[in-house]
Length: 326
Length: 288
Image (cartoon, rainbow over all chains, first blue to last red; front, side):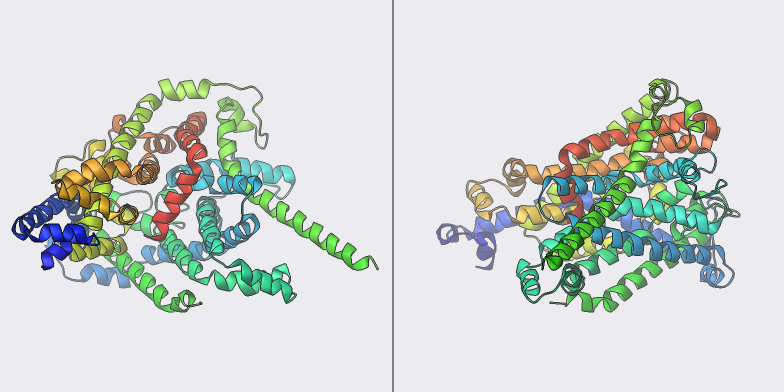
């Protein structure tokens, strides 16, 4: 009976009554269906096993070894982690830079996105034109964005210095990649350029779900636009904001390609972010002493994964109030 | 007597000026880098390096494109990008609709467990940090020397977001349709192939666009797989390769023309299909 109900599903009684007679062959077709299901999933499951689960296990395993890819690996227990927590400075500096980028990038980009969304919500040719153009940077490769901003902020030939000089804001050329602060600024500007559009679209979706009546009531009670924005729009967007912030935080933590192309850690590894720092331990690159320390690199990757997990669950716990606003 | 309405009207006017001022500034910010690249690609290298804030090219030249296309191997890169995108897009459409169908309609032991494990892998992803072990695995399978490795990784480890989109869409198709087919003796796979798949055109468009954007814009994975073998490199890898290899200032025109070649197809597709683009990306990101 159980099988019949499953096969019948939501279906009609007519079919069920027709099927009762042949429950034996049904069990057979049920079996075939299961086999076909597994077979259809198989390529994907193999793919996930080989290219997601295996790398995970690989990183955890080799984080306990010294391993340079050639000589025999030596098991050293937690020594790599001890090194990371006691004798490492570059990684923590990179983590710190990542947090700085995160605070400024997210703060500015969400403000722009929210204001833009409020101003261009609703139908109309102008609004949809603005939406189309504001979203355009999101479709461009982040690596290419790194290159574009590298060219634009180039100290000698770059257009940014040229414009700033023309307008008279600066006298001499600014070396945008010459200090940590400036290099991080360029990364932040590039990051904002890439992702304010998608956040605007999320906000637009959130705005659509706010009932019109709330605004009408407020207007009758004499609330002006600014009051309506702070007393209705912002609180009602809280649940959407919870998701947006989560995605923005994780997105910024995982920033890799753009930084690699844009500053490549210059000057002297000062603008390195977490991902690029660990990436260079695996693949070599500017500013990393003695590359090919795969064991140590794996330990850093495991620590990064743990930090991401702590941030994710910590954020979800702290922000739970936001999703229960109504 | 008239003073209050006048003040109000003035306020409204200021508000509307502020609104359009803000939107104009954001608009310039959003399109400036793209227009800068497109216009600079029409300047001579000399002019690119010296024109500074002058925006419009003195004289439009196409030489940068010709040079990039013929001398800097961009013909090859473009072909590679098209090749990569084509196989990733078709492959991803097949794997994600299949998986979505199995999880939406299938009845088999362990369905919930497998789905939970797949969702969990999403949270454990550390993106670019998997690259090295992925490369090791590809070496073991001997697929690390060409773009086929990238295609296989992208197609068979499809993102959970696409799986959610596919499952969600297939759930909206009435079950009566496949039950009728089942009565007529159609097997589980035949129902997918002959009945469900042809009904999925909007879903296929969304997933196709998502994976096209991903494949066309991909950088680190193809870079790692084509290290020391630039004949297999796609556009993004090729353009950025110029930054580190060439004498920086002499190849500015090539970098700019190359950048333009790599973003133009994307922008054209976007301008025609921007609604689907925005829809797909938001669904994808919110759900995973």
